[in-house]
Length: 95
Image 1 (tube, rainbow, N blue to C red):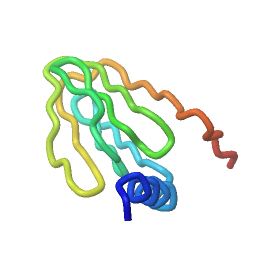
Image 2 (cartoon, rainbow, N blue to C red):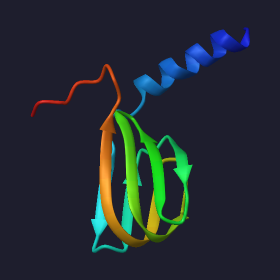
Image 3 (cartoon, rainbow, N blue to C red):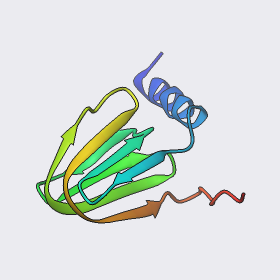
Image 4 (cartoon, helix red, strand yellow):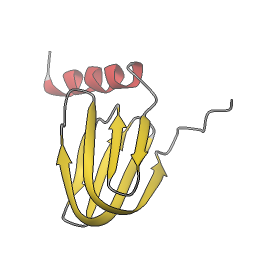
């Protein structure tokens, strides 16, 4: 199996796995994100994460990643804002 075919199969598998993230905000000092795929940006004042339907951007001071496991991540620090940018091609779910 060549690398391109393997990469395509991996992307298909990602699409079939969990398609929702659960975000828990505790005060302005902790955010826990379940079903985080990867960290796409990191700095003292900004962390950007890929979740199934888009990018999650957390802005604050003295931000730290902890407990990055197989499916979740905890972010500590003084959190100022949390933003979401939806991936192209994914619609919002109606309840």
